[in-house]
Amino acid sequence: MTAAPPSRNPFADAALPTFADLLERLKRDRDLPKAKRQNWRWALKTVARAAAKDPAEIVAHPGFVRAVMKGAAPKSIGLTHRSWNNARSLVGKVLEWAGLAKMPARYLAPLSPAWRALMDRLPWGTNTLRLRLNRLAHYCSSQRINPDGVDDRVLTAFYDALTAESILKCPYKAYWGAAKYWNDAADRFSDWPPQRLTVPSRKQLFAYSWEIFPASLKQDVDAYCDRASGLRLDDDHFLRAQRPATIKTRRQQLRLFATAIAKSGIACETLIGLPVLLQPSIAAAGLQFLKDRNGGKSGRQISHIAEFLPTLARRLDMPEETVARLRRIAVKLKVTQRGMTERNREALRAFDDEEAVRALLTLPSLIVREVLKSGRNGYREARMIQTALAIELLLFAPVRIQNLASIELERHLLELGTRRERRVHLRFPAHEVKNVNDLEFPLLPESVDLLDLYLGHWRPDLCKGQDSLFLFPGDRPERPKWKQTLSAQIKELVFAYTRLDMPAHRFRHAVGKIFLDRNPGQYEVVRQLLGHKSIKTTITFYSGTETASAARHYARTILGIRNGEPRPESP
Image 1 (cartoon, rainbow, N blue to C red):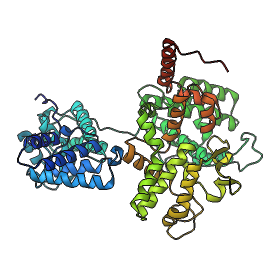
Image 2 (tube, rainbow, N blue to C red):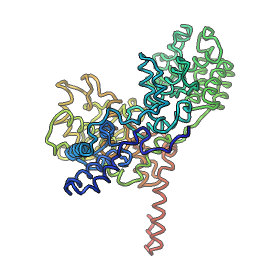
Image 3 (cartoon, rainbow, N blue to C red):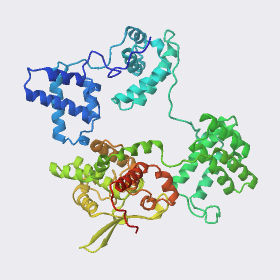
Image 4 (cartoon, rainbow, N blue to C red):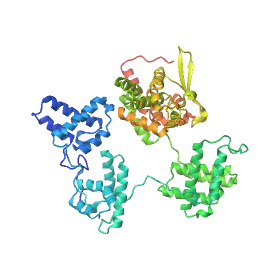
């Protein structure tokens, strides 16, 4: 059966009104006092704005409205905590007035007869199947798609609808579960529609454990990693010890590579050591498997593994001919990542809007003012001040999250100058930085004031009565806050106030764009700020991000000529 045109909400019962319907009803209802109508309309519009949705997209069902409110960002539209609570309360009164406060538990569209009959075929005791397929059944019912019409195109549209509705915490999980359990039902029940769905997968490779291979291979890998860590001073192949993160990556790459060789058809038991893996014919078989698995083309991971192999062969003192052949293979698979990913570029386009830039740059002071004005001194407020300080530091010292989370009070924060002219610098020695460059950032007076406020009043509440070396203490005094936890904390608060998607690492990209938008071409400043070793890295990452700004500078120049403004003197 042909799918129906998309509804205002592809999962909802068409009989349920939306916020837009309620707004229209309130506009026409003259029995209600004017002030009440105005307040209720304000509440409906406010909740929709805070959720970044059109009122026609919000189904006036208590369950759906609760989910929408949970994902809203009221701070991003300037609402205080009190105003947001007021809006939520008034929306409840509107639902009660409209007779919608006591609705059935689900807002989903009713199952069509065909889908009801299909779901009833599932015997009792198959609750997992019913749960995983329930949302797909309601979606297809609302779109007038019968069970025998379900295919991969319908599954993709289902996922798009899940993402657009943004009610489920993990739309991908529901999407994946619908495909997998549809196929399970088709395998288990003969009267189920026979078509199979493609189960989506985010995993590109399933690596074997080391136990699958001969023990001697693992011993070779361990020996190489010991050498790389700098344990052997007589090893001329390593001029300096490699970082633990690099060694961890090499272990993972070698395990993936050995797995690819085994999956290409070469017996695991023959892979007795690294020299065997590096034989050009065997290495080519493993890399070919990875390439075929990736749709017949190379990728960044494949390219990195291929580039590592000739280096590994040279460090194992293998014949020069072997090293040369591995290099030729690596050239064929080389993939060069030019600049930042498209996902980051898309996120940075938000900063073409001056309001977004201003919202991010003024966020720390806004949070501090709000907390101090509230007069509360609980754990929540202390955590907000901590996050405000983390954001402030990332704006003026855009380091990686690992460095930010591991700041030690006595080692990384340097007090300079006199008491009258006190200065504070944030410094990271080269061996702690990914690019092995010393980084030092003088903090602005405003940043120092926030640091002092946090250390003097709010940090003790987060230390739980224990002494800690770290600016951002963890759950134990000898540990800093976990970097993923701190990044998530930053991302959550920035979104709540600005609706910007800003995990901690994206601050590095954002400050570069914000500066270059106002100073096109000044890559050297950004290079030093971000600690890049080469200016080429900075140019590659940011070329193009300041194009719009450069065009605006040019337009202002042309307009100045047209308006007869004098030509500026050359310096």
